[in-house]
Image (cartoon, rainbow, N blue to C red):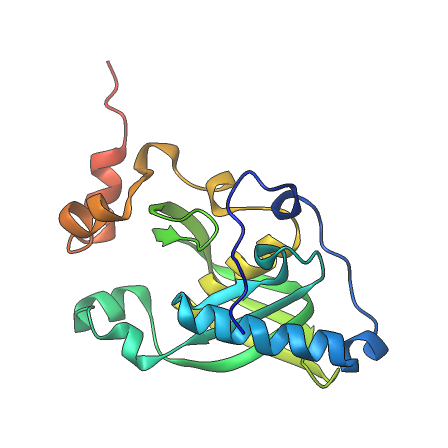
Length: 198
């Protein structure tokens, strides 16, 4: 079932979400939420969705970056972003236990800030620990675009949106991004948004 995605301005997006117990994770209510979030993410379409984005303040997120989503990007763009397909999986009570590899910047959007994107710095590599939908412990080491998705969704569970981390001068509509910035290497785009000293 597709759930309505709440937009920036809703209080639920700004609250730290509640952690879940193992018993809660295995309960039908959370299992249904996970299935509905998966359907909602795929319909949007998006590569990640956190429970607060559907109005539920619990630490649950779903992620999936399908190969078909890469069709409009060039091989060079995919390599620049270190973007590869990521199979569907569920994060519950996640925490970033290690960030390294320095910072990398790319345009980033959000289903809860519909119609806009901006350049956002993120760690190139992260190690994340979480529980899956079976309440099993998982540890993931991720880099590139997958690391970016993980950081974005974990931010949601802490009440943080990408607009809190973005380079504000790069904030633009998705239409402007598609027409003006998508095909430009990120370093060139970043320079164009840097204010000129007077």
